[in-house]
Each structure stands twice: as C-alpha cells, then as structure tokens.
Length: 76
Ligand SMILES: [Zn+2]
Image 1: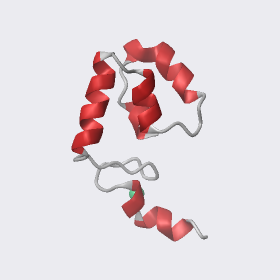
Image 2 (image 1 turned 180 degrees about the horizontal axis):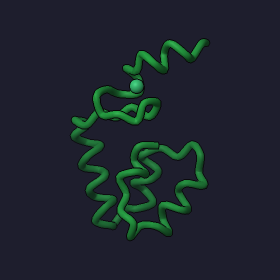
Image 3 (image 1 turned 90 degrees about the vertical axis):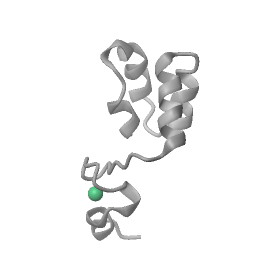
Image 4 (image 1 turned 45 degrees about the vertical axis):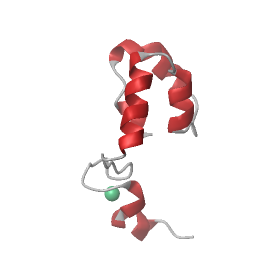
C-alpha cells in the first residue's frame, strides 16, 4: 500500500476512502484519481518503476518482492 503514503494531505478525502479498500491496487487508485494532477503523477511514477519500496520493512532499499525479511517469515 505504498502508494497511499505518497499522497498529499490535500487528498485526505480520497485517501480516507482508498484506505477502506484493503486490497486496492495502484491501478485502481490511479483510476480513482484520474484527471487529478496526482493521478497523473502516480501514473508517471508507476510507468517509470524506478523507485523501490518494501511494504514489509517500509524501506526504499529494496522491493517487497525482494524482501529477505519477509520471505524468511512467510511460509507457503
Ligand atoms: Zn524488506
């Protein structure tokens, strides 16, 4: 849910709503914010895909999918 943390305070209403959606995807968030300046920005960021973010550690050093801490704990 890293995308939520990037949203500015001015989006409080939208963010509050989005937060109620536990399994919302970035695509859906962008869809909701479509037409907004921030929607555009999120799409640009998603398209660039350069920024890493680990939801598990909340660090930018790696992606959630690359997280060794998470992989160590999660058993499937
Ligand atoms: Zn991690």
